[in-house]
Image 1 (cartoon, helix red, strand yellow):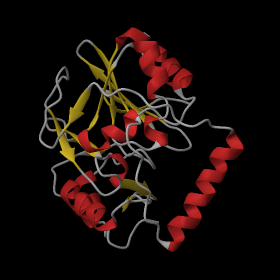
Image 2 (cartoon, helix red, strand yellow; image 1 turned 45 degrees about the vertical axis):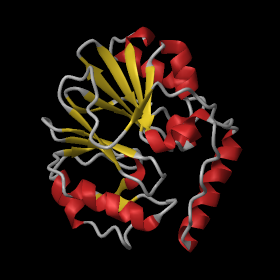
Image 3 (cartoon, one colour; image 1 turned 60 degrees about the vertical axis):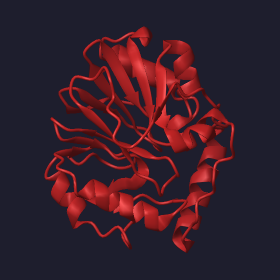
Image 4 (tube, one colour; image 1 turned 30 degrees about the vertical axis):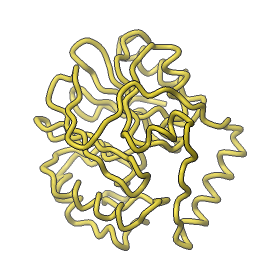
Length: 239
């Protein structure tokens, strides 16, 4: 996998399912999500390309509890010693102290989900390991240790405790799976536990002043990102 530079301080490490983002901090790096289980060696290799060492990873921020986002967190914590941060309501699923709620599928989503899961099975991807969460994040929290203010937004619907990160000064948004992209447009991410909540979360993100949207699925929005979000119709538009 090749790193794609999105901003002077943000890189996307693309994966077939669930991109990882690397953010340069004043004293190291943060990882936004961790890919499916088994992704840690590739992520650490990408860090090395940036001149970073495993011990330079300060934070691992999980936007939500699904396996293509938290899948390699345990391995990366073991390799880096980084703190894990996640939304408070998703923390029990990440820690493994409560069962994760199942998505409510539309007919077309069910077929896509079965295809994705079959691909995981064919690839021999193991189940995600649970991992301790050091910091439970809530709406309105500000992350410490970053080069600019980073506001945490509680964006439920895809999971109960999904979060987005808004880098206020640079106008960068990490929306988690509330937003995906296809063919240059923004769409509502599929596989939601509560579709109405997910649509409301999408609309909340679309109201922000943003220049860049770093999605976990699809290509980043790097031009007129706010306008692209506002032009979307999340009630019906996901593929």
